[in-house]
Image (cartoon, rainbow, N blue to C red; front, top):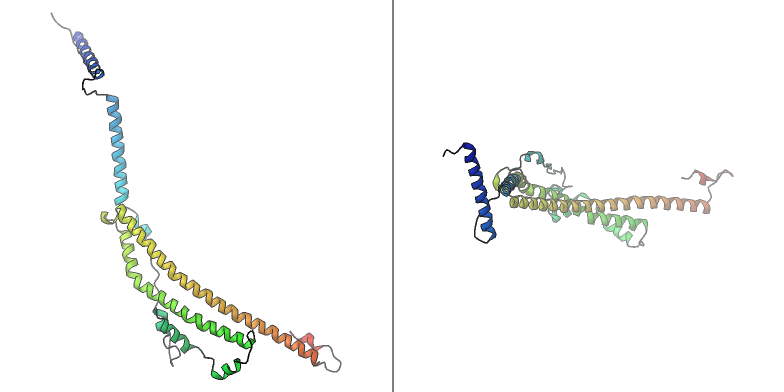
Length: 260
């Protein structure tokens, strides 16, 4: 008997259905079996491909930063201070402005300022606090205390910038490096911590300079305040003397009107 092509196809389809039915039945009755689900397989392949793509993206982000050059900045260079010293009037000033040396700062300030001599000191001993003379002395003493500290703050900042230049350059070089060894997540976190530490040191150094500026402004305000108070006191004294000893000429008008 000759089997037609159509009959062969029906036999194949029927056999496949029987096989699938048998496999499902075996699984239902607890017989160990591998059940193949084409739709589940396709979903797993899609998930695996997506996970692989994400992994490659994460790896690329961790190990390669293409545009690091955009981060590069230029450090501002500071010129070494060089104060002229013709007759010893600024001995120690250059050293005070370039190094962290309180002794040099004190010596430089002493050499560059006029002292209050013993004759003046003897006279001031008889004055009361709040007088014009002792107010001037207070301003001088405050300046003598704060100004050497300011000189030392500037010198310490100069010195620190010079000493830290190599470390700052090395950190920037590592941050801009594109090799895998310096672009792992741990390495980048270490570089970030180092950068934050350097920033903190810089802010602390600038904080000292800001404190110095504040002290100098206070002393400057003291000087201006004393000058204004002295002018008012002089005006009040002149007014008092005019009342006690009038200086009107020939019955003329009150000369007080000509006073400031």
